[in-house]
Length: 429
Image 1 (cartoon, rainbow, N blue to C red):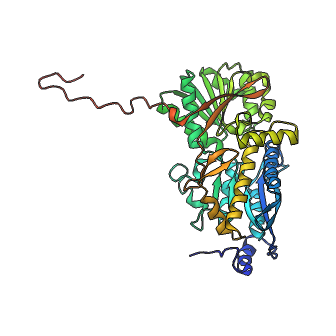
Image 2: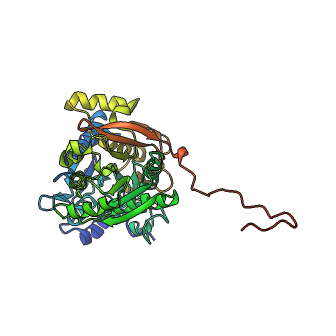
């Protein structure tokens, strides 16, 4: 049973559902306009990163001439964070999703930045078949059956239909391949920390699991309190274990920089590895560049701006010309997400939300700024490139590309079974 009619059907029926979700009712749709909404943390320490995402979105719409097919395009930049919290909140994200669902002109929702925020808005937007394109979510449970928490991802699809896509690879690639990288660097002993949030703990658990598969000794795995002001006592305990590498699953907003600062102050000489949630200049600034120099490594599901070629390189050049600076790593993903939304609306040729979501999910050969790629049956990108950057001279500098084909074999995996002893031969001890 379809609990919600398509947007192209009588608008009064849509308003009945929306009225239950959002007080204030529903206004008539504009037949000549489509609206694209983004929901990103526009307040707090993630603002600089989301600034570049929004710039990428705006550039995609402007390059399309502000139109798609017969429609003019309007863009609405929503904030899912609050000044009080300094980061995204469930209340703000839910309000944004309901606002988008209420507005009959909204045909695509670009977001979220944080995987935890996606858990809030996905089921709301799914009720209206509203296309959601994330430029940054990487938690595996959002799309991949059997890899997340029980009930994922079905719990985010109350209608049973798909409307969510993402243009960035998920953490089932980033977490394990980070562990493989560590082994190649000679790491034997690792201490793992996470922020106990959806993204951070999820990727740390995947890193932990792969380390154990590869025979790396996991000295400890602790969740920090991201509301704490400092972690000096924790770092004293970590130092006592003498790790070769400290891995932090988390973001700049969940105190990644402070943790790195306290690690250096404790005199821990180990390498530090962090995931893409820390790939922003604010992380370096908060940690202190000298504390990270040459020993802090960050993984990222894609290529850094300076390594993009073709349409990606052209985007970076246009961005630099317009804004006078190199874009942060996620800017091109905001641009690509907007291009996907525009393509889906153009293909649908109408404001039918179900048709727009179906058009996006059907993309199999997209020639974009990230290269040639498509969505799989789960709405995940087919891109599988991972890169490692290192901090040098106060900046993130490209280090190497990690290829999924180079994953290390598990010790003992695939080893032939021992042959039966020859008749009369003694059994092995």
